[in-house]
Image (cartoon, rainbow, N blue to C red; front, side):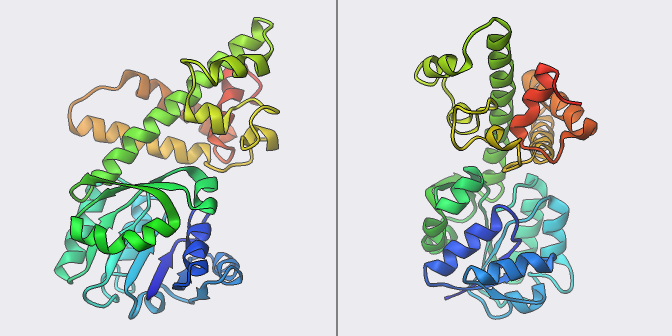
Length: 296
């Protein structure tokens, strides 16, 4: 079975290499040539163009930064829709807006290409360890045919509904994640100012009612959680500017339903301030630096 994997960033490269290691023939392409070379070293087959990558494959998996990149990859003359063979299944894993997802899916269907949207949760560690959660929108039969690939890249697949439902679920999930990180930053900063031992606070809260996934995996205080970016000067696994993008998507989705999200809006404003002041390339957990006053 032949798979084209488009987008080889922090998430895409390990996802592609896991497919290759599982025995699939994976054609890898990224606009940044060095990323394609890196994927080749991890078992993928390097392709020099998007057009050549998608020719004659059974599946196309995309993991791209924003909606504009997805439109470019799918809808241009040299893109996926105009060059993939009829019957190809498109697995769109980027985190983008629902409107773009539906538009691309509709255009693809006119060419007998079948798309599901499959944004993920679990971060770079989930991508590396094949423990991602996929939130899927689209036709159930297309999902069924895609399950062998998704099961290689992740451990949980949830069918949320029609095309675009995966993106809607991801928007809600990441708004919750952003809010959780702000709360963690405030609580652990307050603990420090009150003279509490932050490790002991973690011992209590990580097994109590204040526990969250963000706390157990991405605690913004160093020396407590092994997988936390705070141990490595907040080197980004999931960058703050990407969190801001996802919060913007979530609030845009809320606006489309005339629903107000006051806590989500406040979270977005804090990340916006952090990104504008130079923190965008740091991990999203580095927002604690804005909260505790150490960000300069």
